[in-house]
Amino acid sequence: MEGKLVLLVLVAAGLLGRNDLVATAAAALLIFATLGPASVLDFLEEYTLSLGILLLLISLLLPFARGHLGLAQAAVQMVSLPGLVAVVVGALSAWLAAQGVNLLQHRPETMLGMVMGSVMGVLWLEGIPAGPLVAAGLAAVLLRFLGP
Image 1: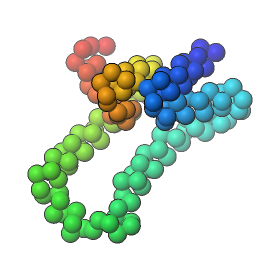
Image 2: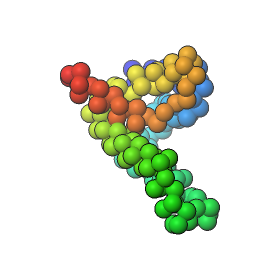
Image 3: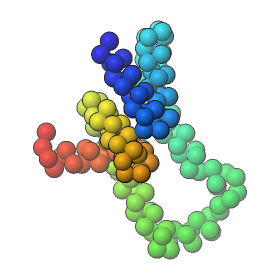
Image 4: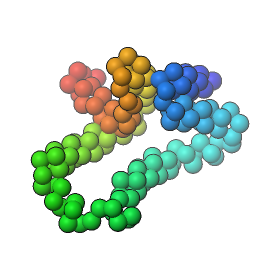
């Protein structure tokens, strides 16, 4: 029951923070947890993270598939200053996301704080919601410096 209350809070926080993805994900899980068989949650727990990463990678590679970006153009862009900065930041972001996956697997209670922080950033700092894995990665790195 307590988990469903957390999901309800996340639905409200997502709506309040204009983060449709958080609101929709929490609402879907609330519905599945309330009405669906446990096997639905088991399936989601097993496959959704990998499937989400797969869909994100497909999205990032679409310009190549559509012919909007070719190898020569990508190579030229990668050795420019903005391209090099993007490569470094992309590598750092991927490392942070891996740290985030580890944190969320071992301390799932941190997700609520990240969502609430994201909502506050959208409402008060005119921000946009960052990817939860990178946010979790930043939290993991900070927690290493701050202690347990």
